[in-house]
Length: 160
Image (tube, rainbow, N blue to C red; front, side):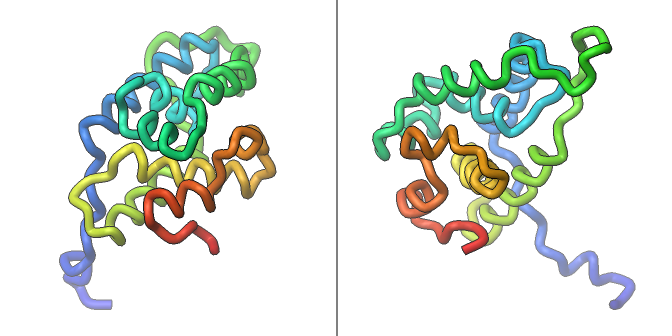
């Protein structure tokens, strides 16, 4: 490994303005749902709250109801806290390692697709893959799976 090998490394794509806005929205959702962390589910909820966002449009094309998915996620997430004895946060909130992994995976997918920035739909696939890998069935129950989404956006399903 040479001294200047870091200069040859490819830079990962930056997060799009829409995705950065969704990060801020997911923080507000976590506070509203009385959570003390931001998880992939919070980011998914933020994506679903944008009626004309790229994810809602994508879900409509594969006949998945964003409203139904949003309702299911809110029911599961409400009041769940990592540190129940601590007061509810009002300032900064930590993101989970699962969300960090999803974001890193999305950056890799965007780099592989040679797009200039990471869009919300790039994060959607790692969120679903993580959910399926950990046995969460809520998404699949309404027809949203890694295979269906990957086929729709034209990328190989991760881990397959």
